[in-house]
Picture (cartoon, rainbow, N blue to C red):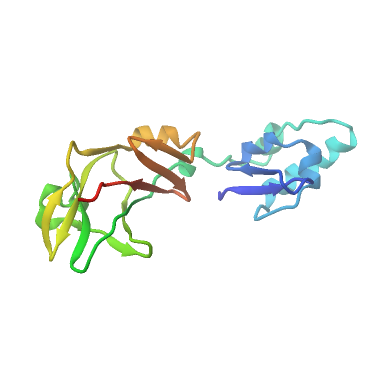
Length: 201
């Protein structure tokens, strides 16, 4: 299920629902008075009817357990919401004609540390270099490389960058944007974007 946003009576207040049980956040009044965005069907219809009933009875909380179980509705799985399907590496770096950035790492997709198989990044507006890979692996080690006229001129100094996706998956349960190991991580629509820095020489 896609993230759903209900707009409360006060326009500036928004409630984000990532799964069915997040509806516990709402009072019956909120459910019956909010404007619906991209959320419909049997789950919402049943909850809406129960909310109307409770609102008439003057109750200010809603129990969704019976509503969901009586209709054989399975709540969506947060694990799917937090599944990392793609990883996007991003770096701002000023280059000249014939110069490129690339990535080398411990995966086939990253060249298995063979610089002849380096993964070339793509230049975008604002001198932002980007590259996307699949997010299937749990542990990724990599370095950025500087390429001149199709030859690797230098590697990043220091140790390998290490990406522990198990650790990242735990963090994105609570934070969709955070800083870790001097990199910015942003998670949205099952895509993890990693913004890195590399001092130019």
